[in-house]
Image (cartoon, rainbow, N blue to C red; front, side):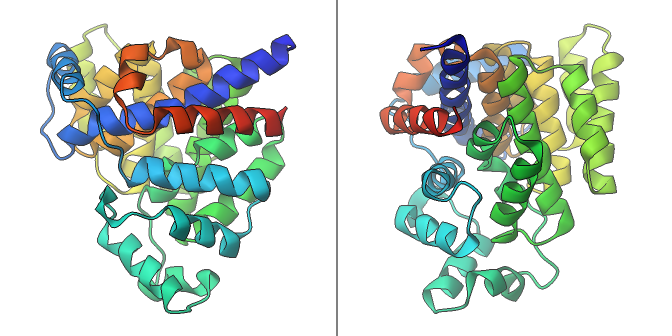
Length: 312
């Protein structure tokens, strides 16, 4: 195996297992108030004692997209919907909007029409972003194809420009982390410059500013990031926050702690943040104790291997 292949495998498995780990370890604290980073580390330790840790719709949809991309690299929305339906388990914490979409598909509404049937102006939630890590790895070396595939994957459920742009920002973050083997302020600046909506662009730019202005007080930094960037389920108030955490944390462990300390939509913010950090640092950077505690880890690891082979 060449160095390129080894690096790609590490990034692919790091991104997908990062999604899983962030989801599983962040899930018990979804909706919780913000806390300090030391207390977030305590949250992680308490959660690990409750293994096995179930994953939510974040991981289930990422798996569905990964399996779809292995068959349809450029994404075909109607067939992607079929993959989602095959993976769908209602107890995974799906939101009301996604449940209505699935019902529309089952009743025969064309997938290309269902999203606006449920959300007339399109959803701008973070659901399209939370699942997009497989595309970031698959098309890390082909930015134009990445953008096209991400837009097609997002429009199936999130037709609003902000929902699409949130997915693009997250996918680009994973792609840059994969191709460069790092993720920092320089990569954030690239993502901000490539934003297609003012909302996402402003959020990522603000995340960059916060990191450049950081005084070294981690507790204050987390509080400021949560207040200014947001911890809600809408894309422009969670994707920039996750990307901030991926940089501010400095490591997989630190990234997860920052994501949990933020509070709010912890499972999705952590899933996105650790996916980026995992792509940058590789699967070996994820503590094995964390991975082993998560439901479905072996399957996710194998899917990551297959994505790496397809991308290579």
